[in-house]
Length: 498
Image (cartoon, rainbow, N blue to C red):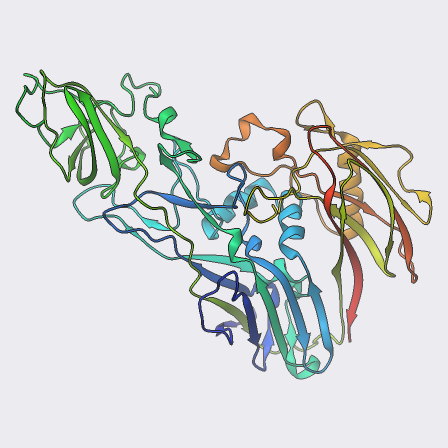
């Protein structure tokens, strides 16, 4: 088995990555590398003070419904050899890959990716979401804290050429990588609170009684005799609901909460200590503030989460390149065959597009995306969620499909004709279509799929020729989807490095 070593490279730019300072340049050393196992590590922070802590995860600005992939953070990229020139240029690679992922990756692969740096983590049995940006303390008195998170971006997601597992700089030239990052693609989203836009609305979660329990998530047991006027409700309080394990509870040390009840005015406080009794399956909580009782005996005590004084602003301190260096092999390749993507952009303020574009020689597949515009100051979305009713394409004035292709049957079921077009394209890619064509919903609520969960990336194989071709596009948008607006046309083109 071939041995390997790992090299971590820093970019030329040492400053934090911001929307205005988003260019990164890497100069690879001389050596022999497995590009297929190399990757970028982009560090991010969603820090809050320990006394004002909520669980936050990442989302795309303006879209809290879908889960986004780490490739969202790379907008444009270029790979260059010192002796052979430009190997590959990937423009709007975040749009392309974000819409290919639901088709190229199986559900199992996409679930696994949650642990290697997706914007969101996996939910627990109660539907609560963990966070890669928090170190949560579920028992004791040690406060939970914010922590950095590393986004893993395979180099093969950025460049098709990086799917090769052996590259010798002595034979083909030293490599340089130039990236334009998109840090504005990450927004902070609170997981469980009373805030509008919370991933899990507190108003829905806390009153819920989940079988087989008989008490709501928020209920606090009132001791007997009940605390009377002029006293403070005794702490620690005991939660009425039972929990099989402490990990299944929604509480953590440092969590900001509101506690209230009959004759106990609402107190905004935070949890300072948590204890768990395994034999009785009960949780006890202590708070930073007292709970005064006034106007009669205390009863009907409840706890709810609340939004802290300020949400975190995403910060990106750095991005490194991790290279896998390998030993020399006996028969190194003299040439590399691969495909690269060229992109055309067009703006079409029409719901029924019928237009011809010119595509380049050696183009074998064409893919089209129409991401919706962002609301307000939010950037344009990456996911092609605007609903297309029907479409078909032509090459040199000859239709590829003999009829208009409907995308959906009913509200959310992808039609067989549309699926066939996708499968034909993947066959022409010499790749497997392993995904179901749906975006993962935030919180993984895939039991209630909507049209907005469908990946409306359109694609078709085209005849491979050595000359340019006229590519006709006919797209009819759904009445509720608006206009085509921004259109990205990606051409998968054959390339070779000798």
